[in-house]
Image (cartoon, rainbow, N blue to C red):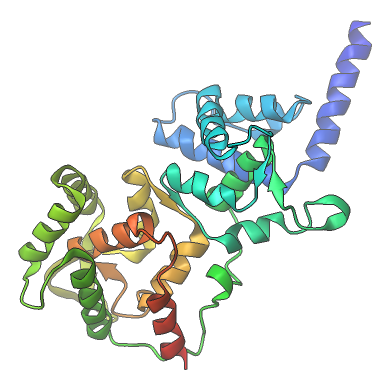
Length: 301
């Protein structure tokens, strides 16, 4: 009868809430982020409200929206070349990259640990697993940064380079990437990145930069001659403004390798922001460059 049906529905919902995994926390965080990005119109997404749905894909559709799930399915299908309904775990990285999202193998290794048969690590994922891996990589409300990118762990005892040393090192890499020279001034560097990335992309980056840049301050709080910079702490949000994203773990390793988490070097000028975008999303080898990790090891040693 109706009463029995209602009781069964409530029981399913209670069991679902008790069994709710961390994956659904990540999916909820993803749904909330998308909701906010689109103007926070309507009711705020809540995973508890959809847990009564037994089919997890339909549950994800109700939480994330059909359009977002379709976008993820298209990315999954591009990676599922053999149309077997599953892809290799690390093929997710290629799919993420095609979506403008940057992650590394260790992001997925952490997520996959203990999720396979008999408590083993997953080696492949179906579509639902792909969605959960995506949410866990880019929207985990409690990201674990204890073991950093591809086995690299930022050393707490690393010698801290001065801010001027960090930015001088950055300039060398920017010149190598964009074909600049030591004699280029700020405007010359910006023009070289406009040539490299395209004027339309550079104009969008400048718009995002101007919206998020703040006065550069010394450790004592005083400003540095009216200079402004993009704080490394909001770099990921700036990438999202551009339609891209990077996992917290990848960005943490990248910033540490360049010394950008150290005092006095925690902000970027416009050219450095362009280089950050290029090195994280467009660098052809698709990996954290070896010279960055070598720098971090030299600094720590």
